[in-house]
Image (cartoon, rainbow, N blue to C red; front, side, top):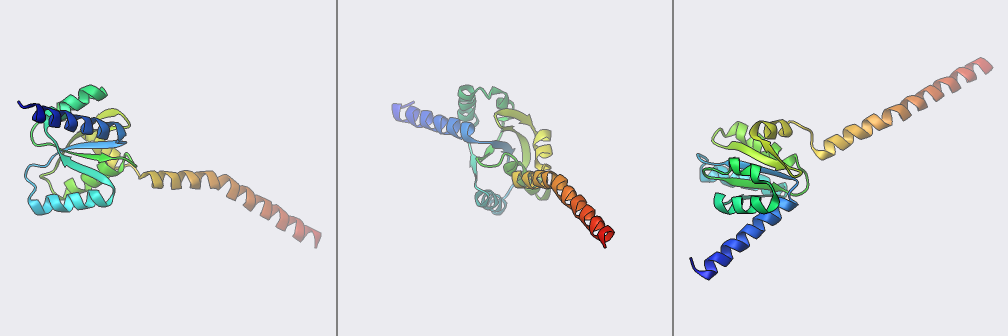
Amino acid sequence: MSVQAHEEKAKLVEEIVDRLNRSKGTVVTDYRGLNVAEITELRKQLREAGIEFQVLKNTLTRRATEKTSLTELDAYLMGPTAIAFGYDDPVKPAKILNDFAKKHKALELKGGVVEGRVISSSEVVALAGLPSREGLLSMLLSVLQAPMRNLAYAVKQIAEKQETAAE
């Protein structure tokens, strides 16, 4: 192997290491059986959500997992592999890929990484069922507002009762 080819591979490994380290949610897929139009549609959906989706060589990805202590991910690096890297929301890549896999049975979710922890395909599907970060924050806000709303309602009722009693 030439020195230049070796340097190019080393650079690719470092890029994969960087993506794995920055990614909050990573999903490993087998895309065999998807036609060009389907892959284009999937890439478009992921790109619009700010998710990188790339076909990567398993050997280079394994070298990257060694450097990131994510070697458990190696079990999912067999056959044609495309990986989605989500940098903002750990749920979003799983949600988009799971929804796409429901409509296109050829797409197989192999496994992934969430917040530095390797997960199985069934855990990816479970993760996809969770609300997005915005949805969770909205639920939390609603829960936090409920006691204040109830207190305000109670104070209003007491004030109205005192007004009617004073009349």
